[in-house]
Length: 467
Ligand code: DMJ
Image (cartoon, rainbow, N blue to C red; front, side, top):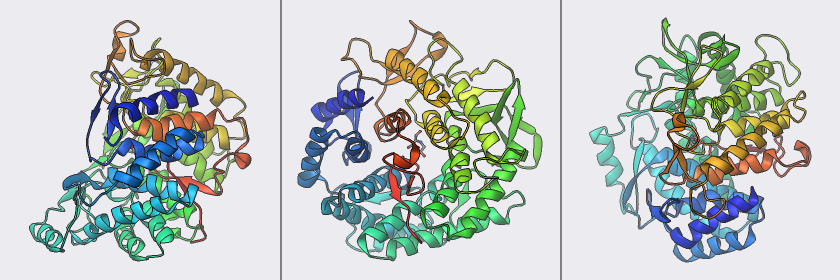
């Protein structure tokens, strides 16, 4: 695991230092935000794996070159916050190196202005990253109403990063901005009959739009962050906890089914039970780990709870189904979206692509750390998944360990197509969760005991504080 990370990050440093992401098949690079995204997103993984030479090279580059003021580009608020701000905050917490805090403040100072760009106090999905000499840009944006539509995941996943920035900088403005927005969103969820949010939010009035209920992309990390924020701040935000418990109840009763021997979370149109779709996305596999984490902190019957509404039995069943998403053919890689309903699960057409996403191994990591019935099971499943990545995510003809997106999983061995960039979350999350899963120490002795740290949605560790 460490060796593969060394190879892949080494290739990034050799070919793409300062660029956002590596294209492993061509040894070329792609830019998205123009900030050296893979470097920032990888810092705490390098520290965790003790890849010192790689970390030192990265720090050297950042000290000389990293600047957010000169970018002059529109970027996704959600992505830059969870990956870059989250990465810088954690690098500071793990090293006490002022460089990372100063860079986090520089980025945060630009981003925080965008909380003023809408009537609700929530930032638009896309924001301008660069030097904003005056507030005119924000005011223009507000007047034009460009905040428009966003979604619960993009709006509701910013708490940990902005609150952490307030803690490490001593300036409360980041926390004040994010709290106003998040309180509004939690209120909106609690005012729904089912405690859920649809996959669209109007930033002018803070109301949800449409009817689609899902725990997959566009909504996923809103639920994830409810419980993580409650834990990270000394369990003082009881509205977050209540909102999480309420939402989980409805996810169990409306969206979860047990069919063909598999427990899974599908999606539906609110108020129309017969619109239920028997699909579960790779992204939705954040949920079992999240339930286990909640149980570790006493919710849903705690870790020993065994009742029908308790979290651990559901977490176990869902983890098995997430693992089953990888075992549907001889390749052993999950697709983006899997059809459930029968005993045999498989990716839905055109979704048979694997981006080396983290969510399934993330579930295995949490279950291995938390489930009292774990034994070696989750580690063994993780080993099988890792063997599949080593064999089939490996780019043909390139150095051992170099992996990329794998397409055409339906074709099976011999028909696989390697293409595309290596998403920065592969090192930030996927390899980190594999590494932590394979750690033989128990949770209390591990690098990030789950009573003392929570991971943001991009797997950047955040210290638990008292509030
Ligand atoms: C990551 O950037 C984060 O985990 C996010 O919450 C969802 N998508 C990717 C990984 O799949």
